[in-house]
Image (cartoon, rainbow over all chains, first blue to last red; front, top):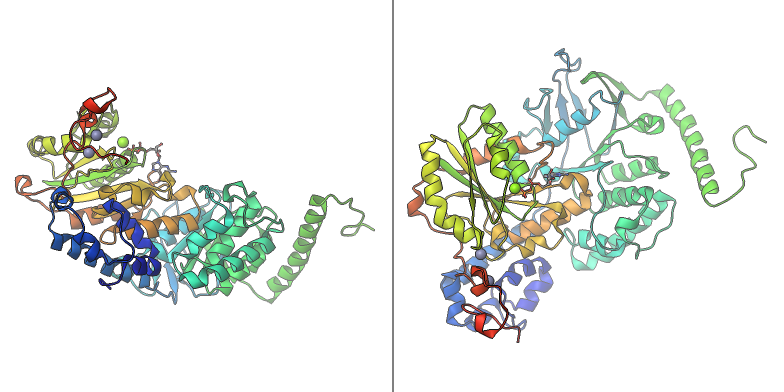
Length: 333
Length: 226
Ligand SMILES: Nc1nc2c(ncn2[C@@H]2O[C@H](COP(=O)(O)OP(=O)(O)O)[C@@H](O)[C@H]2O)c(=O)[nH]1
Ligand SMILES: [Mg+2]
Ligand SMILES: [Zn+2]
Ligand SMILES: [Zn+2]
């Protein structure tokens, strides 16, 4: 490792530039770090109050740690279990546990202000009777303390909410590349970016180009891009979605794509199609889980009806958007 | 008494997060105090004072705030002990990207916000690189992808530290931070410690308040563009 040239190192691990930049020296790319260091004048070491060997050792230590981080794989989630707490009035929640596995979608429904977001926060926080609800959330049977040593708790969970927007001044292509580079090798970046881009376009129903600025995307386009990105680039196995407006995107296909990537999805929603589409739905009332409804055959039929209706509405929406005059819809002839 | 230093770029959420941390310690009945180090003006000490804890401010004026910090920290430390504090928190604005106020064996926390730009992890130098804990704020208003990219860059600037996302506004994540502060901080004799990173001597005459332009006013460690 240490005898590789600067070029070899930065090609393999582009991120170490973040460390190298800090030295404020012009590295000779065809030499190793050590050889470069030998070229430095005395005051380089004086200024740092470090000897040649100390700087070298520090770099070796940095490389070891950085390499370990880059090669670290994220913990697989086999199950996540929610244990009951109490509602706003102190009444214990009426269930024993809710266990969810990869590929499942759980809808969280209830009046505005009933406590849907609170449940999502308990999951994000991996609550252990240390939140206002007193709920406990256990991932892979492991407590927060144990987990800190393996992977960070926070990186198991991806979040998507109404308030989250793109803020970087970049175009779609640059942005997706930059995200993909966090997790895959250079050779795989392009294919991954293409997949995310094409998925996002198909979800949003509104074309945008790879050159579009991410901050200039419409609400629907940016939600579609966030979801496609989350499904294929982000490695977090659990996705929490808090009432994203559906803004004309094919939200149901979006969910299928997420669970197709073996994610566990919790989604707080008022959307009837989405709520019926979920494997289970948790009903929240007055800060507490009041019911857990599993989709049965009856509901499946209702879902098919609702899907048809929604599909037609989406179609109507696109026709209107593209400037058509509408001569036929629903019972209209 | 345990000293814990907080530093980070301006408007990154230091005061907001520190207030939440103070509240968390206060709720447990632990006596804490806070000192704000700044350049010219600050109201932050009043914000801390309004929380009902001993507070103080130090203004470095024309000096580099980190140089000022290190020359005044012994006095501040004594002040904290006189006030019977169990934890003394200091906040310094990372205005000087060359310096960092971190001391060996004193828990050092860097607070940096998601909106500061994708390159800020490599721009802020020792402030980030040498911290024991890095708290990333304002993740609540950006996309998951941006959070992941930022996190990766912070990791690569500082692969030794513990990195957390916190929400300064809602306090989400603060409880865990307080637990980590208790675990990672320790009591030690301040006078026996050393700085983690030597501060460049007042880099040049301008560090000391020079305003005139021209060769003859450039004294000290001057580097030419070439
Ligand atoms: N959205 C959001 N805003 C934050 C967060 N943390 C701090 N802020 C805001 O950022 C601004 C600057 O925070 P402040 O604590 O004064 O920064 P300081 O200069 O580092 O002490 C304030 O308006 C805060 O309300 C956060 O996590 N999310
Ligand atoms: Mg402040
Ligand atoms: Zn300085
Ligand atoms: Zn200067």
